[in-house]
Length: 69
Image: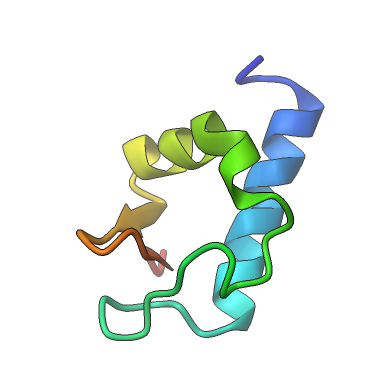
């Protein structure tokens, strides 16, 4: 599943939404709902994979921001 096109597309969409709303630091972090991610709780494995890869940081308040590469 982690290599599937749908999985990778969902990851790209989440990163794009967070970048669009300028969630690029702890101070500007957003919940997935605030970023406009449709059904944010339905794809926890997608988000977990992004966090594990270091592309996304999850705060202790359940907000996220994108790591600038």
